[in-house]
Length: 275
Image (cartoon, rainbow, N blue to C red; front, side, top):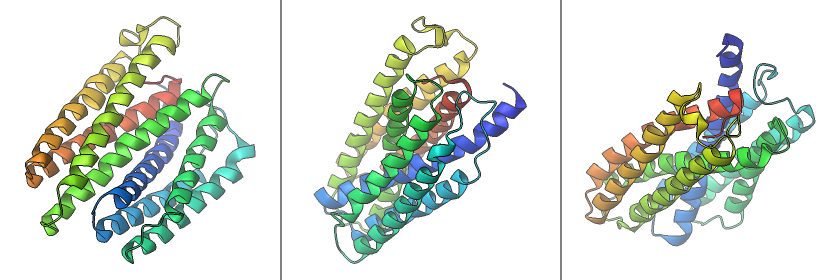
């Protein structure tokens, strides 16, 4: 991979990583606030973290290089709109955090923030797509990354909350690990779909032996199967209220999915390969 390609892709990878972490963690925290007895401190802190990450994504968005060495194209007509919805997501997440801290559920602000975050991902994926058939799959890929990576970040924060709130019921963490298992399972199914119908040469599963085979195998084993096993183990330990063990497992799972997110975004932006 050429040096120019690596340098340019790093900026877009950073944009994707920051935004999927912000959107996924905020969305899961908001959901838990609606359906469980999770503490207002956890939800407020997670929303504040999401707002900070979204702010960094907005700052990154303003300095993205022209992608002449990547498998995407510039979308100057959408740059302004993308920046506006990113700023809106940042502000709405911050306002929602204030509402959460005060004991409210942010039933209107929360969904508006999520809509703004999804809109930012959509404007990026659909605007940068290198072909008419690439935009929607890239958006689906980024949304699945948000569910897994952002959800894992929220899960780590939640697991820590049990160390200072021992009377908190196990239901929030049990639901969180169940959600993550489903999200990783969906991402695994998408991986199989991409390798069947969206390979560069049109031959199913040719990527397992192609020039990017190392990254494809790493994504399958380290980015999907390994986190799925860890999340199941965390789910089982959460059922028995072994929260310290669950926290350690989720930490390892978060590290694996963060590495996976970087690999997935890099392959998508640099060579147009979805994994």
